[in-house]
Image (cartoon, rainbow, N blue to C red):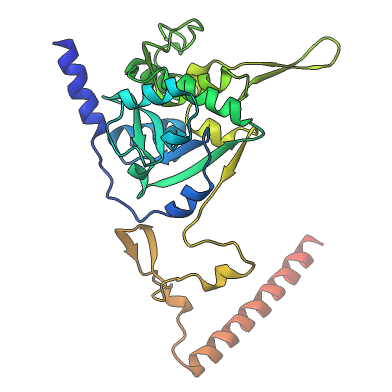
Length: 309
Protein backbone atom coordinates (compact mmCIF):
# COMPACT_ATOMS: atom_id res chain seq x y z
CA UNK A 1 0.00 0.00 0.00
CA UNK A 2 2.78 2.42 0.90
CA UNK A 3 4.58 1.69 -2.35
CA UNK A 4 1.38 2.33 -4.35
CA UNK A 5 0.85 5.68 -2.60
CA UNK A 6 4.46 6.64 -3.25
CA UNK A 7 4.09 5.91 -6.96
CA UNK A 8 0.82 7.86 -7.19
CA UNK A 9 2.40 10.82 -5.43
CA UNK A 10 5.43 10.67 -7.74
CA UNK A 11 3.18 10.68 -10.83
CA UNK A 12 1.27 13.66 -9.42
CA UNK A 13 4.50 15.61 -8.88
CA UNK A 14 5.76 14.72 -12.37
CA UNK A 15 2.71 16.10 -14.18
CA UNK A 16 3.39 19.13 -16.37
CA UNK A 17 1.49 22.21 -15.26
CA UNK A 18 2.86 25.18 -17.22
CA UNK A 19 2.10 25.61 -20.89
CA UNK A 20 5.04 25.02 -23.16
CA UNK A 21 6.71 28.40 -23.64
CA UNK A 22 8.75 29.35 -26.67
CA UNK A 23 12.33 28.55 -25.60
CA UNK A 24 14.98 31.27 -25.38
CA UNK A 25 17.69 28.69 -26.07
CA UNK A 26 19.01 27.87 -29.54
CA UNK A 27 18.97 24.08 -29.29
CA UNK A 28 20.88 23.39 -32.51
CA UNK A 29 23.67 25.72 -31.47
CA UNK A 30 23.77 24.14 -28.03
CA UNK A 31 24.25 20.72 -29.63
CA UNK A 32 27.34 22.02 -31.40
CA UNK A 33 29.07 23.48 -28.33
CA UNK A 34 28.23 20.89 -25.65
CA UNK A 35 30.93 18.37 -24.66
CA UNK A 36 30.90 15.01 -22.81
CA UNK A 37 31.02 15.67 -19.07
CA UNK A 38 29.12 18.97 -19.27
CA UNK A 39 26.20 19.64 -16.95
CA UNK A 40 22.90 20.67 -18.54
CA UNK A 41 20.58 22.82 -16.42
CA UNK A 42 16.89 22.64 -17.27
CA UNK A 43 13.92 24.82 -16.36
CA UNK A 44 11.16 22.30 -15.80
CA UNK A 45 7.40 22.72 -16.05
CA UNK A 46 6.11 20.05 -13.67
CA UNK A 47 4.52 20.42 -10.25
CA UNK A 48 7.82 19.34 -8.75
CA UNK A 49 9.65 22.01 -10.77
CA UNK A 50 7.40 24.72 -9.39
CA UNK A 51 8.06 23.44 -5.89
CA UNK A 52 11.84 23.48 -6.48
CA UNK A 53 11.71 27.01 -7.94
CA UNK A 54 9.97 28.33 -4.84
CA UNK A 55 12.38 26.63 -2.45
CA UNK A 56 15.67 27.33 -4.24
CA UNK A 57 14.68 30.74 -5.67
CA UNK A 58 16.18 29.66 -8.98
CA UNK A 59 14.69 28.88 -12.36
CA UNK A 60 16.94 25.81 -12.73
CA UNK A 61 14.95 22.90 -11.40
CA UNK A 62 16.76 19.95 -12.93
CA UNK A 63 20.27 18.95 -13.94
CA UNK A 64 21.61 16.24 -16.24
CA UNK A 65 25.06 14.97 -17.21
CA UNK A 66 25.84 15.04 -20.92
CA UNK A 67 27.22 11.71 -22.16
CA UNK A 68 27.47 12.44 -25.86
CA UNK A 69 27.29 9.87 -28.63
CA UNK A 70 27.56 6.26 -27.59
CA UNK A 71 30.10 5.36 -30.29
CA UNK A 72 32.50 8.02 -28.91
CA UNK A 73 32.84 6.21 -25.56
CA UNK A 74 35.97 4.06 -25.67
CA UNK A 75 35.17 1.96 -22.60
CA UNK A 76 33.26 -1.06 -23.88
CA UNK A 77 31.84 -1.84 -20.43
CA UNK A 78 30.35 1.65 -20.12
CA UNK A 79 28.81 1.38 -23.60
CA UNK A 80 27.32 -2.01 -22.75
CA UNK A 81 25.87 -0.73 -19.46
CA UNK A 82 24.23 2.23 -21.18
CA UNK A 83 22.60 -0.05 -23.76
CA UNK A 84 21.14 -2.15 -20.93
CA UNK A 85 19.13 0.86 -19.75
CA UNK A 86 18.37 2.55 -23.06
CA UNK A 87 16.41 1.16 -25.99
CA UNK A 88 16.08 4.37 -27.99
CA UNK A 89 17.98 5.69 -30.98
CA UNK A 90 21.69 5.13 -30.28
CA UNK A 91 22.67 7.70 -32.91
CA UNK A 92 21.27 10.45 -30.64
CA UNK A 93 23.48 12.30 -28.12
CA UNK A 94 22.56 11.09 -24.64
CA UNK A 95 22.11 12.39 -21.09
CA UNK A 96 22.10 10.74 -17.69
CA UNK A 97 19.51 12.20 -15.35
CA UNK A 98 17.42 11.42 -12.31
CA UNK A 99 13.64 11.74 -12.60
CA UNK A 100 11.04 11.29 -9.91
CA UNK A 101 9.15 8.06 -10.46
CA UNK A 102 11.82 6.76 -12.85
CA UNK A 103 15.13 6.98 -10.99
CA UNK A 104 18.49 7.38 -12.74
CA UNK A 105 17.99 6.87 -16.47
CA UNK A 106 19.53 7.49 -19.88
CA UNK A 107 17.63 9.86 -22.17
CA UNK A 108 18.27 11.61 -25.49
CA UNK A 109 19.29 15.26 -25.37
CA UNK A 110 16.49 15.97 -27.85
CA UNK A 111 13.97 15.37 -25.04
CA UNK A 112 14.66 18.97 -23.99
CA UNK A 113 14.58 20.55 -27.44
CA UNK A 114 11.72 22.85 -26.41
CA UNK A 115 13.02 23.67 -22.92
CA UNK A 116 15.04 26.56 -21.54
CA UNK A 117 18.56 25.15 -21.11
CA UNK A 118 21.99 26.23 -19.94
CA UNK A 119 25.28 24.39 -20.24
CA UNK A 120 27.88 24.42 -17.45
CA UNK A 121 31.31 23.24 -18.63
CA UNK A 122 33.84 22.11 -15.98
CA UNK A 123 36.83 24.33 -16.58
CA UNK A 124 40.04 22.48 -17.37
CA UNK A 125 38.58 18.99 -16.91
CA UNK A 126 40.65 16.52 -18.93
CA UNK A 127 38.98 14.23 -21.46
CA UNK A 128 40.00 11.15 -19.46
CA UNK A 129 38.46 12.51 -16.27
CA UNK A 130 35.33 13.58 -18.16
CA UNK A 131 34.72 9.95 -19.15
CA UNK A 132 35.50 8.83 -15.59
CA UNK A 133 32.74 11.18 -14.42
CA UNK A 134 30.41 9.68 -17.02
CA UNK A 135 31.43 6.15 -15.98
CA UNK A 136 30.61 6.94 -12.34
CA UNK A 137 27.12 8.13 -13.33
CA UNK A 138 26.58 5.15 -15.65
CA UNK A 139 27.27 2.72 -12.76
CA UNK A 140 24.30 4.27 -10.93
CA UNK A 141 21.76 3.72 -13.70
CA UNK A 142 18.61 2.15 -12.30
CA UNK A 143 19.01 3.69 -8.83
CA UNK A 144 15.73 4.95 -7.34
CA UNK A 145 14.89 8.64 -6.97
CA UNK A 146 15.16 9.77 -3.33
CA UNK A 147 11.97 11.68 -2.55
CA UNK A 148 12.88 11.99 1.14
CA UNK A 149 16.15 13.73 0.28
CA UNK A 150 14.20 16.20 -1.84
CA UNK A 151 11.92 17.15 1.05
CA UNK A 152 14.84 17.28 3.47
CA UNK A 153 16.46 19.80 1.12
CA UNK A 154 13.23 21.78 1.07
CA UNK A 155 13.14 21.88 4.86
CA UNK A 156 16.82 22.85 5.00
CA UNK A 157 16.41 25.75 2.55
CA UNK A 158 13.05 27.01 3.72
CA UNK A 159 13.32 30.27 5.74
CA UNK A 160 10.36 29.11 7.87
CA UNK A 161 10.40 25.75 9.60
CA UNK A 162 8.57 24.43 12.64
CA UNK A 163 11.17 21.69 13.10
CA UNK A 164 14.95 21.95 13.53
CA UNK A 165 16.48 21.63 10.06
CA UNK A 166 18.85 18.85 11.07
CA UNK A 167 16.21 16.90 12.98
CA UNK A 168 15.78 13.42 11.48
CA UNK A 169 17.29 14.63 8.21
CA UNK A 170 19.05 12.28 5.82
CA UNK A 171 21.18 15.08 4.35
CA UNK A 172 23.89 15.15 6.99
CA UNK A 173 24.60 11.44 6.89
CA UNK A 174 27.98 11.70 5.15
CA UNK A 175 28.15 7.93 4.75
CA UNK A 176 24.77 7.68 3.04
CA UNK A 177 24.92 5.29 0.08
CA UNK A 178 23.77 6.99 -3.15
CA UNK A 179 23.82 3.61 -4.92
CA UNK A 180 20.37 2.91 -3.43
CA UNK A 181 18.56 6.25 -3.73
CA UNK A 182 19.64 9.67 -4.94
CA UNK A 183 18.57 12.76 -6.88
CA UNK A 184 19.95 14.28 -10.09
CA UNK A 185 22.23 16.99 -8.65
CA UNK A 186 23.65 14.77 -5.90
CA UNK A 187 24.66 12.08 -8.40
CA UNK A 188 26.41 14.62 -10.65
CA UNK A 189 28.21 16.30 -7.74
CA UNK A 190 29.39 12.89 -6.47
CA UNK A 191 30.58 11.99 -9.98
CA UNK A 192 32.79 15.11 -10.14
CA UNK A 193 33.98 14.50 -6.59
CA UNK A 194 35.17 11.04 -7.70
CA UNK A 195 37.87 12.73 -9.83
CA UNK A 196 38.53 15.51 -7.25
CA UNK A 197 36.90 18.19 -9.42
CA UNK A 198 35.27 20.88 -7.24
CA UNK A 199 31.68 22.08 -7.53
CA UNK A 200 31.26 24.26 -4.43
CA UNK A 201 33.97 23.06 -2.01
CA UNK A 202 34.40 24.32 1.54
CA UNK A 203 37.52 26.53 1.74
CA UNK A 204 39.49 27.15 4.92
CA UNK A 205 42.77 28.78 5.88
CA UNK A 206 45.30 26.54 7.60
CA UNK A 207 47.41 27.71 10.55
CA UNK A 208 50.24 28.76 8.21
CA UNK A 209 47.86 30.80 6.05
CA UNK A 210 47.61 28.30 3.21
CA UNK A 211 44.36 27.45 1.48
CA UNK A 212 42.74 24.08 2.14
CA UNK A 213 39.75 22.73 0.22
CA UNK A 214 37.30 20.17 1.59
CA UNK A 215 34.71 18.36 -0.54
CA UNK A 216 31.21 19.59 0.17
CA UNK A 217 28.53 17.08 1.05
CA UNK A 218 27.08 16.06 -2.33
CA UNK A 219 23.66 15.52 -0.76
CA UNK A 220 23.41 19.29 -0.22
CA UNK A 221 23.94 20.07 -3.92
CA UNK A 222 21.09 21.56 -5.97
CA UNK A 223 20.97 22.39 -9.72
CA UNK A 224 21.75 26.09 -9.33
CA UNK A 225 25.10 25.24 -7.66
CA UNK A 226 26.61 24.33 -11.04
CA UNK A 227 25.57 27.74 -12.40
CA UNK A 228 26.97 29.49 -9.33
CA UNK A 229 30.20 27.49 -9.12
CA UNK A 230 33.36 29.40 -10.15
CA UNK A 231 34.80 26.13 -11.48
CA UNK A 232 32.22 25.80 -14.27
CA UNK A 233 32.02 28.03 -17.34
CA UNK A 234 28.46 28.98 -18.24
CA UNK A 235 27.63 28.58 -21.92
CA UNK A 236 24.54 30.42 -23.12
CA UNK A 237 23.01 29.91 -26.55
CA UNK A 238 20.35 32.63 -26.76
CA UNK A 239 17.69 32.75 -29.41
CA UNK A 240 18.12 34.92 -31.39
CA UNK A 241 21.92 35.09 -31.00
CA UNK A 242 23.67 38.31 -29.95
CA UNK A 243 27.21 37.62 -31.11
CA UNK A 244 27.87 40.80 -33.08
CA UNK A 245 28.09 44.33 -31.71
CA UNK A 246 24.81 46.22 -32.08
CA UNK A 247 22.82 43.21 -33.29
CA UNK A 248 20.40 43.70 -30.38
CA UNK A 249 19.03 46.71 -32.30
CA UNK A 250 17.69 44.30 -34.89
CA UNK A 251 15.74 42.07 -32.49
CA UNK A 252 12.15 41.42 -33.63
CA UNK A 253 10.45 43.49 -30.92
CA UNK A 254 6.67 43.71 -31.27
CA UNK A 255 5.56 47.16 -32.36
CA UNK A 256 2.41 47.21 -30.22
CA UNK A 257 4.41 48.16 -27.06
CA UNK A 258 2.57 45.48 -25.07
CA UNK A 259 4.20 44.32 -21.83
CA UNK A 260 3.96 40.65 -20.86
CA UNK A 261 4.08 38.71 -17.62
CA UNK A 262 4.29 35.54 -19.74
CA UNK A 263 3.37 34.52 -23.29
CA UNK A 264 -0.34 34.21 -22.34
CA UNK A 265 -0.61 37.36 -20.21
CA UNK A 266 0.18 40.56 -22.13
CA UNK A 267 -1.39 43.98 -21.63
CA UNK A 268 -1.12 47.40 -23.21
CA UNK A 269 0.24 49.96 -20.74
CA UNK A 270 -2.13 52.88 -20.11
CA UNK A 271 -0.49 56.29 -19.78
CA UNK A 272 -1.63 58.49 -16.86
CA UNK A 273 -4.25 61.07 -17.88
CA UNK A 274 -1.99 63.93 -16.79
CA UNK A 275 0.68 62.85 -19.27
CA UNK A 276 -1.58 62.81 -22.35
CA UNK A 277 -1.13 65.86 -24.62
CA UNK A 278 -3.66 65.99 -27.44
CA UNK A 279 -2.60 69.08 -29.40
CA UNK A 280 -0.19 72.00 -29.55
CA UNK A 281 -2.28 74.27 -27.30
CA UNK A 282 -2.44 71.59 -24.63
CA UNK A 283 1.31 71.12 -24.90
CA UNK A 284 1.91 74.87 -24.50
CA UNK A 285 -0.51 75.03 -21.57
CA UNK A 286 1.24 72.11 -19.91
CA UNK A 287 4.62 73.76 -20.47
CA UNK A 288 3.36 77.07 -19.00
CA UNK A 289 1.87 75.21 -16.07
CA UNK A 290 5.19 73.54 -15.36
CA UNK A 291 6.95 76.92 -15.48
CA UNK A 292 4.34 78.38 -13.12
CA UNK A 293 4.77 75.46 -10.70
CA UNK A 294 8.55 75.89 -10.93
CA UNK A 295 8.31 79.65 -10.09
CA UNK A 296 5.93 78.88 -7.23
CA UNK A 297 8.31 76.23 -5.89
CA UNK A 298 11.25 78.67 -6.01
CA UNK A 299 9.18 81.36 -4.29
CA UNK A 300 8.15 78.84 -1.65
CA UNK A 301 11.80 77.94 -1.02
CA UNK A 302 12.71 81.64 -0.65
CA UNK A 303 9.87 82.25 1.81
CA UNK A 304 10.73 79.16 3.79
CA UNK A 305 14.39 80.20 3.86
CA UNK A 306 13.48 83.68 5.06
CA UNK A 307 11.25 82.27 7.79
CA UNK A 308 14.08 80.03 9.03
CA UNK A 309 16.40 83.07 9.03
